[in-house]
Length: 56
Image (tube, rainbow, N blue to C red):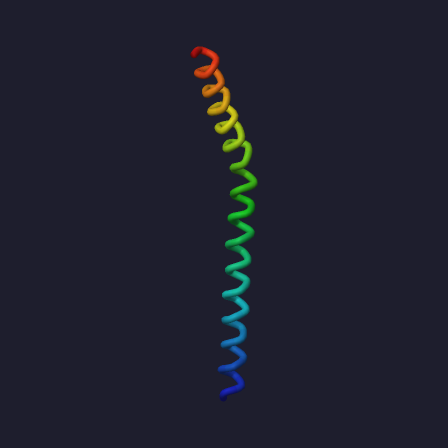
């Protein structure tokens, strides 16, 4: 009986690790997909700052 319990505990632990890995991969993909938006947004902020600096 303890062998079966150990087996299921190991399966559960492996599943938890897989879930953590999937979460990390998901966040990495989200960062990658959001990069162009962040890049464009930051570029606009810099351009706006340059305009303000040039006006004064």
